[in-house]
Each structure stands twice: as structure tokens, then as C-alpha cells.
Length: 334
Image (tube, rainbow, N blue to C red):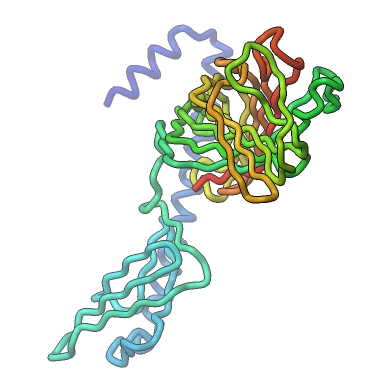
């Protein structure tokens, strides 16, 4: 064996005192090994005596009832073994499928039942993917815009543009979202593409005028019961995301923060008078073509809260009031 030469070489570089200490350690190691071997022999002798005295009639499987829920014993290693070794067992979540192969003319039996606890075995464990893609996620929330000091009161000439609180909505449809694992499946880099549908509702008979280079209004001839400005953007979010339970996103606390960029793809006003006359006008209404801002999400499982705040102005520079869009609501992740 190669152990002895190695020990000799190791001792050759030692002082006399170190060699003496090394010999004492080796002698103590031998004593400990002899003690452990003796304990193992005693344990085996005790087990052998118990096996000889065991009443094995209790393990008779001739009375197997295929319609009863089989007793289960959980063995080390995470494998469940039923009372009959001819049974094949499959576990899917909380569902258990037992296929019993009949003997001596007995027909095969299949049992399906639901256990109280979900079976999570090491053999069924799958390492979380390093790239996760989600399609058609949905955000629903409220819209508004504020001045830099978060004051929603606009100058007198622009007051017809003050949205009705609680009635201006935003819907974000995420075409896809992808997450890339950065650190142990807890920290992710996320990005995607979404469509933002904004609806700002106004409580006034003053309507935005299209096709002009500044914000202005005309007064409707008939009283208006519905007056809104709608805009549609395509956006790209870029965030860092933390998952508390990467093995099961549906039971994970998560928080993300980052930024977004958007491009205006369309806008229009829509009015409806008390006499049900409708009018619609398409234009950009001096809205900024490009927008960017910050975003954050916080939630558990499929339910999350989101907040988006634009760092760029709602309108093109010099065309109207200086306000910054803000939206918040519920984000659904399935």
C-alpha cells in the first residue's frame, strides 16, 4: 500500500518532538478505531438476536385489500413503499396512484386517492431552470399624473386635463417576460415586452383639440357625460428580481425593481354627450413619443402590487403643463 511511504515521507520533514506527537496521535487513532469496530460488532449481534425472535406472521400479505388505502412507510432517501411489493406507486403532487399486480388469478387493481400532504421527494426534485419565460401576464391599475411635488392641481388654463381620481385606468399586457438566473436562483435579471393601455377620464365639457402644437380645448355644444383621453404605448421593462423560494414560484415572496422605456403607438379622445352622441379624434395630442421611468413590484405567488413612475414628462416640452405619469395596481403572474 502507498500509505506507509507517505507517512514515512511526512515524518522525515518533522522534528523529533513532532514525530513523537505524531506517533501518539496514530496510537490514539488506532484505539478509537478498535472501540468503534467493537461497538459495531455488538450492534450487529443485538440485531441478529432480535431478528431470530421476531414474529414474522405479522408480515403476511395474503389478506391485502386492494380497495383500502395502503399504509405507507417513509424510508430514508424520500421513497414511499407500500404494504405490497408488487405495487407500483406514482405520486403527482397530493395525488397518489397505486397499481397492484394481482397474483393467482386475481385481477390487477388501480387505486387513486388524494393525501393530506403533498409528496415532495428527492427523486422528483428538479433544479430550477436558469431561464424562465412567462407569456401574457396582466397588470390592472389606476392612472394619474402629477407635478414634481406630486401636486395634482394644474394651472387654471389646464384644469380640464385633471383626471378623475379612481376612474382613470391603466392595463399592461405583457407579451412575454423572461428571467435569467444570476445568483442561486434567488436573484434574477428580468426583461420583456408589454403594451400599456392608458385611459384618463375628465369631468368637464372641455375637450382636447387635435392637430395643434399646444394643449388647448374647445367647449362641447352638448353636455358631456363621458370625456377621456386614451393612449397606447409599447414598452420594455428591465428589472432585478428577488425570489424567496426559487423551487416553487407559486409559493414564493418576490420583489423587483428597475426601469422601463416606452414608445407611443397611438392616442385618441372619446366623448359621449347626454344625448348619446359620440365623437372620437385620433392624434398624438402633444404626448411625448418616448417615455422612461422606474418600476417596482412586490407580492407573493401570483398576486403582486406594481408601481410605475415616469421620469419623463407626459407632454412634449413647452406644449402644456409639466406633469409626470404615475400608475399603481395589481399585477397577475400565472
